[in-house]
Image (cartoon, rainbow, N blue to C red; front, top):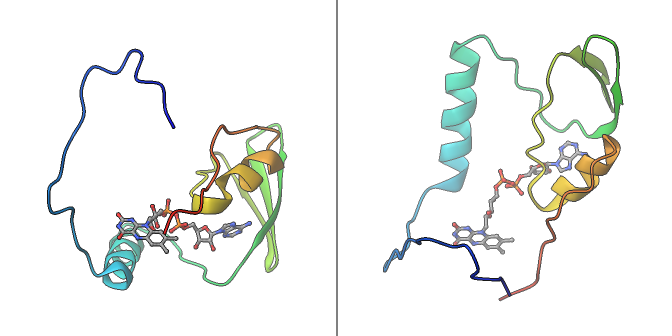
Length: 96
Ligand SMILES: Cc1cc2nc3c(=O)[nH]c(=O)nc-3n(C[C@H](O)[C@H](O)[C@H](O)COP(=O)(O)OP(=O)(O)OC[C@H]3O[C@@H](n4cnc5c(N)ncnc54)[C@H](O)[C@@H]3O)c2cc1C
């Protein structure tokens, strides 16, 4: 599935890792709130429009203006990238 050309090393984790995924997300959100972030749930991003000062993020609950946008769209990162005119070379594959 990948070309090994140019790969210098790798990591083998025999027993992988286990986390409480919901707890992890809430811990990150709590830490971000403590540093002044606002967390808005259940709010789909519909459009990303570049402006002179940064970005206009059009969401289902209104428009947010910001300097930078982090694309953390996971399986949907490609679609989110397309909103900014970027074609990301990532595609989710069905495995098990
Ligand atoms: C069935 C399954 C089992 C897995 N098991 C494991 C495992 O055992 N161990 C492991 O390490 N990994 C596992 N993975 C992989 C792991 O879940 C992902 O690598 C990880 O969740 C990616 O995290 P992320 O934050 O990048 O993206 P995600 O967790 O995919 O989060 C992306 C978020 O973006 C949101 N989003 C997308 N589009 C928009 C939009 N337009 N507006 C607003 N929000 C949007 C989505 O709703 C979602 O909440 C598994 C994945 C699947 C599907």
